[in-house]
Length: 300
Ligand SMILES: Nc1ncnc2c1ncn2[C@@H]1O[C@H](COP(=O)(O)OP(=O)(O)OP(=O)(O)O)[C@@H](O)[C@H]1O
Image 1: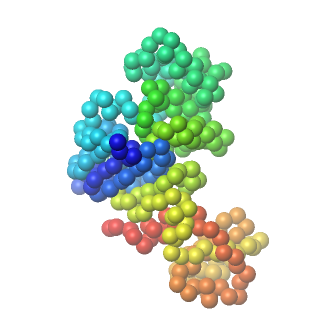
Image 2 (image 1 turned 30 degrees about the horizontal axis):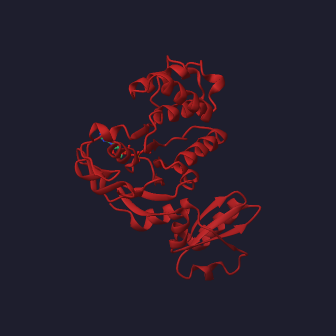
Image 3 (image 1 turned 120 degrees about the vertical axis):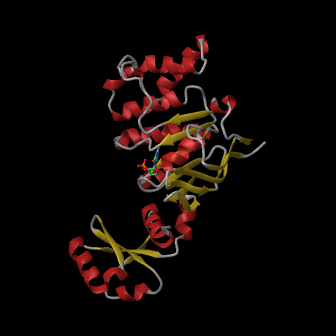
């Protein structure tokens, strides 16, 4: 039996002239949380849609749970859960009615259906909203209902497309607690995001740019492989310091303001340039790494 939830071989999606996804080779282990990270339009949603069988690839192969599945047969579909960016909910139905509807679609009946729905309401803490219409739920509650609906049939692989965009931080945290729980139970999770914070939750991150995979690894591996250095200078006047640095060193020096610090990316022997300043070494964030990767590997 394959230990991989997903394997792709040279996956391509072309829309007219546009190569939205351009030769992706992925190996995603079972029970792993894998995150696609990248700017708007880099191909995250298109990749997710191909992986979950909604879009057919222009070229390449996808194997899901060890089976080659292009196009996806029905028996594979039942093992997949998909939470789209728009949350596939019926606004005119209440929380419980949405859950009932999806449970019936997936063939759940009787006591099994009731038990599954009650479990999900408890896990997502939707108890007091069970009779609220989906249209009247605020962002975080809608998101949790969308997750409950996506996992009602206990999928083995779950796809989440920018699940916490527009959701408050407390709800986002609760959402991730549920996702971790699912991964601990063995569910393989593929998530797309452009939030670097969200990417920190993933076991493995793939940086996408213009349909290409620039780099992948765990957040710790990506930090370790970062070929530059990040340093920080504390200051009460970050704007002033930032201007000073760019006047002195121009585009040679990449810096940005971070609260009351100016963070600077140093390459080669740039450290010499800062000898008059009191700086300290800091860990690169995933954003630092992504910006570096995009600048150094960007494909035309
Ligand atoms: N159905 C389509 N027809 C034509 N072009 C498309 C279609 N779907 C996506 N694209 C194009 O393919 C590229 C990748 O889009 P995609 O939605 O996959 O990116 P994304 O990384 O998910 O972006 P976002 O973060 O905005 O959701 C974009 O240039 C987009 O305009």
